[in-house]
Image (cartoon, rainbow over all chains, first blue to last red; front, side):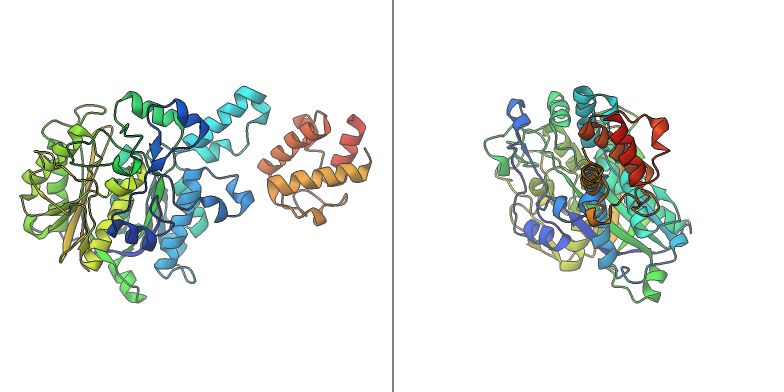
Length: 408
Length: 79
């Protein structure tokens, strides 16, 4: 079935590697790590004392009064959305508001607000709890704020599928355009939960790296020494646009969002399916949806979080779904794991790999796992022609999302 | 506390929670119409004023506090 063509015309991000897309991409290609030691007082008692914190704090970028009404995840979504909006050339003359949609999700939501206000409740009583608490912690808050800032009236949606959120939000944005509900959709993910409670929770699952003495070496997908993921924070936003709409206004096009595949494992709340069945189906669906051949996909930005089991399960799924030809990158080796923003940030990296003909490195890949049976751009960026590429995202709950981007 | 001192104290609170320019704060000004303080921010102003001036401002009184002067009078009478 022929679909309405959807293209990417704007990118925005604030990440552990930089305050915008250009600085983040430069740092990625240089193989820099955004992971550092947590110096907050509360970190001292935790088994995990490292994280990939934002390179540029939002405090200096938004009005002080506005900022106190925003959860950190909302503030950075707004910052990234304005970047993407300006990058798409829409800052001065946006589209018809009734044809503008938003699809922005978060994996965990306004946890920092919830926890801070609970501290106030416990210490000072209910009257001192901020009247802004609910709009700050509600999971649709980031999407609603982005919609408010840009005046979107075609519908504002907030997907939540844990670490697949950013990718699923982008897929939903594409669906909105294909279904004729919008001409432009601002889509992506945001996450800001670097706090002792989420870290303690993930630590109790034994999911996080405890390489506290070597923060920059802690996130090491596919390396034999990997021992879990490193929590990151940030936001990534894409402007998706109906191709004809973009062409009519002479917009610069980064790439086509050619297709998406979404599946659910129906297997376990946190463990991925042992044979990667859901992931394999998601990749196959994305390729079919994009109407490309397996062999066209020469690069994959993998989910690869640096966990012992997940990294290799994905390799098996990729081999089965694509074959043995694609060159992989695990950019989480540099950014840490941005949870609900990961799929959006990694989509941006995938798109820029297509644009620039360079695949970002996977750092800390010193001793590849025996199960790593596919080619990886290990430790150094690799220059190669990338006409089409895939981005994988998987989330707790058994969510599998694969996106295919192609050269426009 | 004089009325001017209470007004100055309210101006500090209004600047902190709602970004109101202290120079704009005067007894005749309406919180909503002149100073653009929305209902959620007004809740914050009330709670901060209770703390700052050591008074209680029940919710059913807040609706009567239309202007800065109304609030000054209420706080003056309570403190």
